[in-house]
View 1 (cartoon, protein in one colour):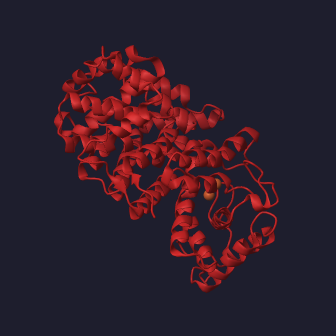
View 2: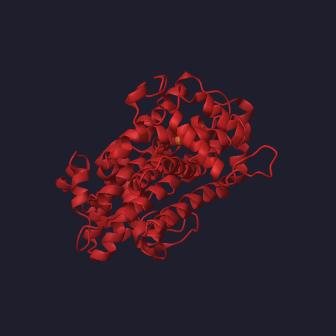
View 3: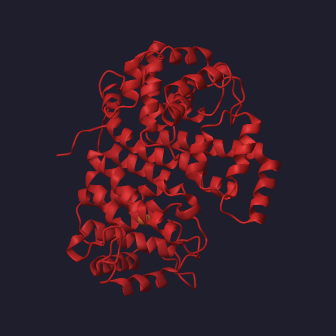
Length: 458
Ligand SMILES: [Fe+2]
Ligand SMILES: [Fe+2]
């Protein structure tokens, strides 16, 4: 019998993956939810608006991975710390410029730093607009796929618009900006400052930006919490997540059925794949190859559904790895390799917070283990690696070989199959390798017309 899963619990837990991508201290979206819903209640918004506000706050950063690679390439900087520190700025030009010059090119050569700086000077405005536009549009699209209302999508779309028209991408003003975005922006800034420097800093920042970034009525509603000790205590307490889960507005808690769990896995696969141009479509293709292997192995529909979800989410921990590592064209140094390897543990940590996906956590954590014990992170060997993980690992390696990588072009399918055949028994499970070969031979995904067969775009 399928487990009953609360939608709020599922998305609240996954919002932690979004915090990682934004370089925010863990729990940022959940804290924003606490702040924003309290502001909404103070404004006496009706339940249906609070419901949409609740999910806007939890999912406001859904599009955040889509500009990470671009930030990294443009500013020659680590996207995670860049995003984190950028949120502490108040948008005034001298401060922004100082920040950009301090951040641009940390660790890169002088000529590259010079070119990046000139590019930002010439195109700074349009570049930032484009980065924000991509992020907001992508976020709204994914929210739509998750079946949220137009209000939630608009709430994510307008997140970076400011009350006085100084925001982006559309420079909307005042009540032209979605009410949900106006509250979410304030909640975001309040949390970033409260977490970095404490309650007084958050209150001062909101007061200073009232009428500029923030709707004055919303800023007033937030400032009314200045003396509410319970509000601040819960914000920094361990019980916050539990409290936020309980406060989901609406008649009754929404539940996620099996089809919705599939949608969530597909939606987050897109968040993961958007992080790097080199992993575009990776999670979806790994799901396809894993499903083909599972079909060959004669698995039933339920087991295949499970393996598809595991494959879609196996790399969710990559959201916590900087694009300066993920997209590096050369060989990774020891420290970078350590950061890269961390993604498997992060996948496990994120997925294990979600009851419905708890079984997937072990697969996410072990998909880089090898039968001979030379994999990571634990160095598991042989029977220590379960069948599900072996299927995902085989699909993962096959896709990695047949896709472009920062350091090499895609390898033709026949050559990729030869490589994984050579790895059967040492790294990969021979049964899974045979199943993949057989599935590929039966399907039409190899373009026979090409001299060196390549996968048709899957
Ligand atoms: Fe991986
Ligand atoms: Fe992968």
